[in-house]
Amino acid sequence: MTIADNWRAIRARVDAACERAGRAPNEVTIVAVSKRQPAAAVREAADAGASDFGENYAQELAAKRGEVPDVRWHFIGHLQRNKAKLVAGQVALVHAVDSAELAAELGKRSAGVQPVLIAVNLGGEASKSGVSGEAAPALAKAVAASANVRLDGLMTMPPPDVDPRPIFEALRALRDRIAGDLGRALPVLSMGMSSDFELAIACGATHVRVGTAIFGERPA
Image (cartoon, rainbow, N blue to C red):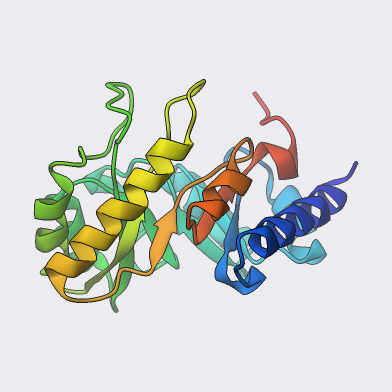
């Protein structure tokens, strides 16, 4: 199977999952996770129809944007404040803001308005960044007040080897509660990866992050 074949298979599975959930396929954005993949692989996926790509490392993102400029880039990893200048204003969406200070830095470095999501660590994993569900509402208020930043929603990544449905459902409920507190819509839920994106779509995901199922195993 080529990357193009894999992309078409994932697109078909997303469309089918949307149909089962009573949702339109255009409600779900597939973010093709191209971390550590060469620019040629990104180009092959783009030529097959992929439009959105996600990177975990700021310097790798900057390099690939130069090689493949005609797609929408997302930053999906943990971002250090001193790397914000490489990301702010350069991506469609920053998926993993975990502090008010990072949001402020992104706003300071962006020439326009940078859309962001708050990363919520609902699994309580010490190895992952993100705020707790309890801390998320306060952070959301701070991010929403940041200049040149637009809070669009929440993201999460469930722990491995557990049923992800409760995590996905909890993120959706938390998003709805925060939206009510802020008095405005937060339309984006970034959740679901290669192994569980269909379930995430059933639970309301608007962005699914799929890497291995499109590109295969990452190069060492």
